[in-house]
Image 1: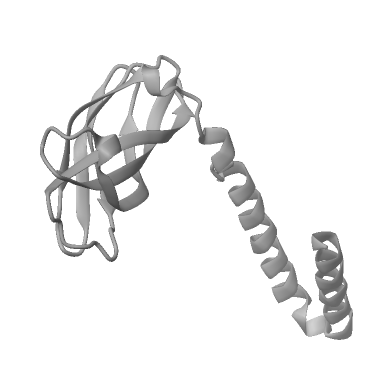
Image 2: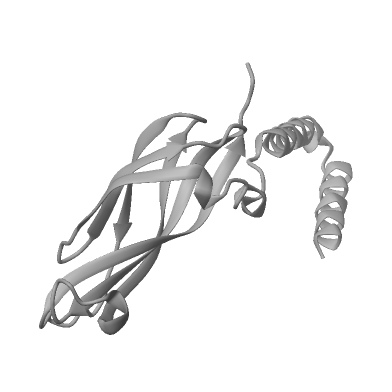
Length: 167
C-alpha cells in the first residue's frame, strides 16, 4: 500500500513541475530537503523496540531499595538497579506491581486479595557494571478501602537494552 501512495505522490509532484515551470527551482529544493531528511531519519532512527527487549536477563540485574510511595493520584515505585550485563546498556525495566489487602502483616500474599495492579516501564540508562536510580509512576484506579494491612509486591516483566557503543 505504501508503494502505491509513494507512486501517486511522485506522479503528482512530476506533473506539477511540468505544468508550472516557475515551480521547478522551489520544487527541486523541497525534494532535496525531503529526501535528505528521510535519509537522515533512516540512518539515525532507533532500532525496533522488539529488538531492544530481553537482550539481558533478569538474573543479570540487581534491584536494591525498592520502595513504593502511595499517593491518591500517582504512586511512585523507586529504587536502585545494578547492571551486571557485560555487552548491553540497560535502558528500561518493565515492572508489574500489585497491591494487596491482607488480614495481617504475616499473611502470605497468596491468601490476600489483590486490590490493584499496574504495569509500567522505568526508563533508565545503566551502563555495564554500574548502578543507577530508577522511578516509575503507577496509577491504581478504583482502589477499595483497605480493611486489613496494605502490602505490595512487584515482578520484572521484561528489560530493554542497547548494545554498548565503543568510542
